[in-house]
Length: 319
Image (cartoon, rainbow, N blue to C red):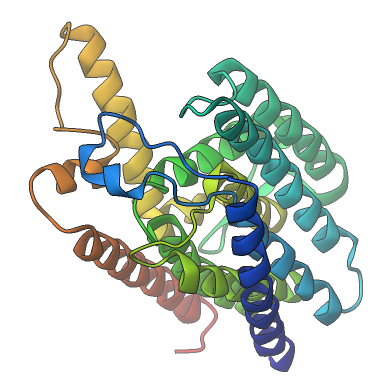
């Protein structure tokens, strides 16, 4: 267990140390966020530096030093995280370069996400296996694991990306998720993946000290896609994809609320279910302060995560 805590603490330290030069560099290069005109409550945040996801992406690398035994799958998880982060970086760079909140076109993002996830899916099918675990119930998808993993990655990365809308929201929910998921990985014997989960969590915590309200820097798509890729990879490589939505329920709600809003808007020719989507913006519109929204999202993630963890503890006979 010592490796888990050391990975967490070292990643936290690296992220904190990197935070100041990254923030300074982003300011010097004028890498600032352009705020959508219809998010009126966020107009004061215009000009806040972005691409802060590099802090925890680099901090997460500290987990490498605490891996033992066969480390190749764990290294692959980090590569996936960085691949999605680079895709997000391209999106952020275009936004900053052209001073608008539209980076890569939606189809370009999807092509990139599907391309990365397809490589991952093929690796999992040929090297890892095609089985999923759900509280001890094994489900073998056979070749179906390939499309399943592709859809899973696209869903998770976009869900985390959609949750990134308030100071400390996506980072805070991800931090809680990664700690709980890391504990489950440790319990089930996925030691190296557990170490990585704790390392990413520590690195994200370091970033949150700069990203908490009022945020000094945003993670950008660089960070949100990297987080989504890391979260999805840890679940896919351990066969625990089915419990990810249970712990990350707030990610799911962000995506579902956005899908419902867009679908209903088109079908009803202009009507809306929510005042604004994703869901956290709806709460803002009805007067809930973003700090309270962020806190509630974290608490709900913690409660759901602990329920899943307790389920596995019971299953393993620990309690």
